[in-house]
Length: 487
Image: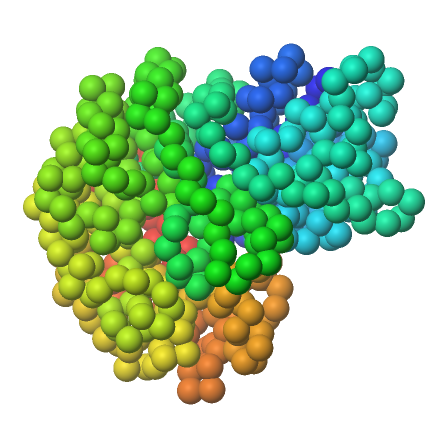
C-alpha cells in the first residue's frame, strides 16, 4: 500500500513545532515521531512517503492542488495541540474514500475530535507499537488482502475508531517496554539536507532519541510530543493518582552507537538529542558520551540541572562534542520551584550553569512564567534580573499554558485561572491564556515580550550571536526568530 505522512503548510502565520508540540517553529526539526512509524511501515514492504510541506516551502493552495491528484491508499497525520485545527481542515481536501490514521498527543487526548468518519482511525500513545497492525487491518478491510495474522480493528490495542456512529475505544497497550527493538529511523525518507539548526556547528543536522520520558513531577510539564502522547495514554489506562507517568525507557549505549554511525554515513553533521532528560546514571552517561566522541558528531541535549552538577559528567559531555544544553529553569524563586514540583534548588541551577560554561558548553535557559499562583510581579522581576546577571547568551521565555493531561490544567480550570480553554489557540512565547487574581493575562503577555527585549537587545548579546553565525542561512534564521519573539 502507498502510505503518505502529511505535515500540511500553514494557512497563515508560523508552523507549529510538531516534535515538541507546545510552541511554534523558529527553525524546522526532523520529526522523529513520524520517522519511526514511517520506517516500520517501509520495513514491512509498504510504499511510504513523508511530506513535510513547511520545509518544502509549499503554500496551502499548493497543498490543495497536490491533495486533489495524489493517489495514496492511506494518509497519516501526527497532530499536536497547536495544529489540530489546521490538520482537520487539511484532511478535507484529500480523497474522502481513503483511510486516515491520526496519532500524536492531540488525537490521544481527544479521539472523538478526529473520528468524524468510519474510515478514520486514532492510534493513542506510542504509534510505533501498532501502526503496522492498523495498516494490515485497513488493507484487509478494503482490498480483502489474505492475511491470516491480521488482527481485526476491534482487537488492536491502543486504537480508537468509529463504527455505526459510535466511538469505540479499544483497550490500551500501555507503553513500548524495550525501545532497543525499534528500527533506526530511516532519515532518507525526508529531505534531510534541508534541516539546519543555528545552535549547532554543522549542517545538515538531525534529531535523535536515546530515551523516552522524564520521571520528574513538574505539574505543568509538556514533554516532547512522543512522550506527551505516551503520558496521556498512560493516564487514561492508569487511574492511580500517584502513577502520573509511564516508566522511563532507555536505549543501550551500543544501540545508540549504531544509529550514530548510520547518521554519519548519510553525511549529517550534527544532532539535536531531544530526550526529555538525557542523563540517566553516571556509568551509562559516560559510555554514551564515549560513543558520541568516537563517532565524532557534535550534538546538543535537554537535561535537568540537578543531573549536571557532577564535574566528571559535564566534562564527559564536553569531550564528546556537546555544544549546548537546554535547561528547564522556569523560575529563580525557590518557593515557586517547590510549589510546581520541580524538585530542584536554585543553587543547583547556578552550579550546573557554571560547570557548563567552564567546559565550553552553552547553557540555554527556558523560563516559564506563571506556572504557580505564587507568581507575582515581584517574582517575575526577580527571575528576569537573575537571568540577566548570568553569563549566558541563550534564553527562552514563555507563559505556562494549561495543556491537556497536566495537573496544572486540572487545577487551573478548577480555580478559574484559564482565560482560553482551547490550547490550540495558545502561543506560550507570545500570549498568556492564564491569569491569577493578582496577575492578569495581559501583564503576563507583556512580561514575556519585555523579557525577550531586555535579554536579546543588549549590545553584548547581539554581538556574540552575530559572531557565532557560521553559515549565511543562519543569519536569516536568527533575525527571523528574534523578530518573531520580540515583535
